[in-house]
Amino acid sequence: MAGLEADIRLDKGGFRLRAGFELATHGITALFGPSGSGKSLLLRCLAGLEPDCRGHIRFGGRDWQRPGRFLPPHRRRVGFVFQDSALFPHLDVRGNLLYGWRRHRGPGPRLALEQVSGWLGLDPLLDRDCLHLSGGERQRVAIGRALLAGPDLLLMDEPLAALDHQGRAAILPYLERLHRALAIPVVYVSHDLEEIARLADRLLLLEDGRVTGQDDLHALCTRLDLPLAHLDQAGAVIEARVAGTDPRYRLSRLSFGGGSIELPLCPHPPGTPLRLRILARDVSLTLERPRATSILNLLPATVLEIADDNPAQVMVRLRVGDQVLLSRITRKSRDRLGLAPGRALFAQVKAVALL
Image (tube, rainbow, N blue to C red; front, top):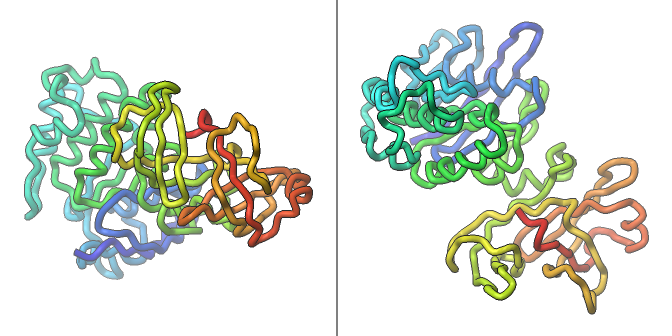
């Protein structure tokens, strides 16, 4: 089945949305940008909730919208999860889930309530009153209800924004489980880079109503020509695998295409694939291999590119094996080390700083 192709325009309340992009038929695409950039408005256009939207939207080889044609929301087979779970207060958890199940209208296979409930850890909650659920539990029910309706595309508008840090940490493992299990594409809006790094396959960057970048998550995170690589939380995302543990020091060793990294002990057996996020501010550089240092992770690297980050600092893009890292250092350090593209050096990463 073909993916989603869109080239849409909407003027609303003085804001101009001009967005053209394509999405794959599977995986999670994160929609990221500053507040007021048009992320939620773009989702509403995809869902058919903005009848004044112009242009075209085509999904799965079928025109949802083009000049002279505009499919209403119920004919687009889109699931929408909002910041507010919007559960029906007069129904318990099972009733809310069954509401979604009864709305299934598509030709595709119907998910069983038990299957979705198991994915989202809802079995102990099925007979609970929705008014007495935590914020994270409510969002899990809202996601389950949307899935049981059998959507071809799932839109999630900052579903964790209303939760505190503890609530977000509790629900993220369930979303990761859905990521592995779902066969439908998801567009996921978030302001949280850590959230995006854990869940997304691809990124769509939006600013002032326009798409400024679209690519694989790993590639966009380290492009120095985009604002994403100059945020305080800028960093690289590495696909790694648990290679072993050191019980004596309670450390895990992860291997990846650029070598191996030690970090505080993680509860996963050898062979488990993991994502590793390495922040640019936690990567220091040295031209020679240190003889004695407290930093455990020393990775041979080559400078690919250097760009100004702010008046006092620069961002260095590094090749480490088949991976790319970022390092934020001072302009003075750049000059003292004589850094330039092609320079071989070592990247140092503190084990306690790894995410």
